[in-house]
Image (cartoon, rainbow over all chains, first blue to last red; front, side, top):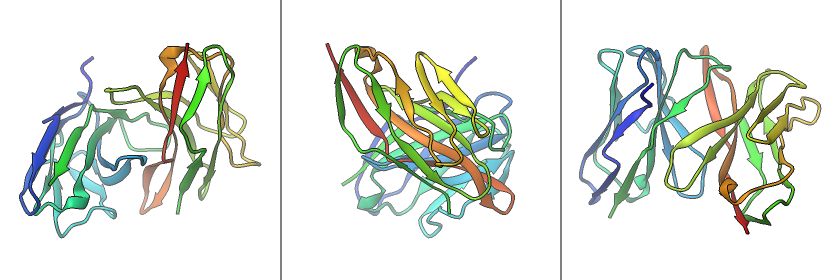
Length: 115
Length: 115
């Protein structure tokens, strides 16, 4: 079974530029998550989708971050414009359904450096 | 809100030593509890989980017991190996409001095992 795919793996941009990350979840998984992991910290949830609808985006900085999952499968996360403090690893995860007992499977992440 | 506190690292042990990584949590209701592991250069992987009080999760020689009375989920292993060197994250999956569930992570504990 293929895991969660993410691209690119690494990205370096200057502040005020824009960047987009792509995620393809495990086939059949209805729930998709984007996390931000700053160096030395645990991942923090940015947004959660159930199929193509948003379940929770309360921690997404909506003035600069946006995300979509148009067909209920793959997803993109965009930052525009980027700030220095956005330097982090962006993790995508998926689970069969939403709920406290469903395991989340994580992709390898995209390491973003903003200079 | 929900939160997870785990012992700070780094932790350095000799091979075959006993390992304990402490984890305590604060949550509304009765969350599920998880330990995730991140090996160097790899993504987050689920190590073990427990979904209700007094459950014991176990995998690869690691164990953790869900203690509701002390709100704890300490990770233990009787004899660590060099290959166990990684960052370990304690996490809970609990209600985040509006019918959604959210995975909340601790800051992670880096373990280094030396021969």
